[in-house]
Length: 201
Image 1 (cartoon, rainbow, N blue to C red):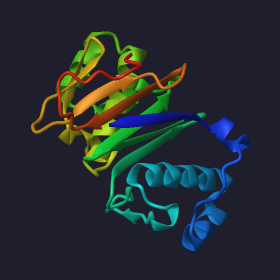
Image 2 (cartoon, rainbow, N blue to C red):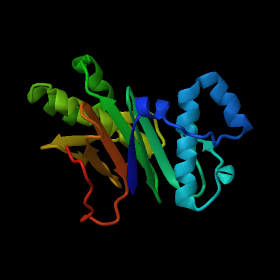
Image 3 (cartoon, rainbow, N blue to C red):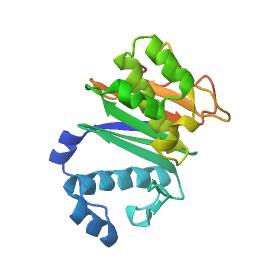
């Protein structure tokens, strides 16, 4: 598993040649230059990892709109100025969120199962825990190809900066800080419990 972190504002200033096919260019004409640059960058990274020219990287889409290619699993997430891409040989989900004021008491029940929600409130509804759990929930449902509306189906607890899934089989959840002022989480099947990843929270 590996992941990349980008500043969107820097990407918008960089020279990124388009790698899009005609169908993707039509989509980019509607969605804007940021979409064109990010999709071109994604295809370039997939091309490098798969050993294929970008012209042979073709996306299909799941029931909830998650893009995929047959050669490699990947996922992307974007929040404000932070963009993350993650790659793995098995299903993977990544989420990044800018830490900012949110209506935590209103939003927390949407993605925290009962046990975690109770503990969150008992600990004083702390911002750090809220965003770690939000990112973890998003990463879990993305790894499963599901939506955040079904987050309660993937229960977990937060304990001392770690996410511990409460279902089986469950992926490993890696919390990290992609950029200052942001929180991130990656959900993936880890081959070895000794894996060591950078940037833990």
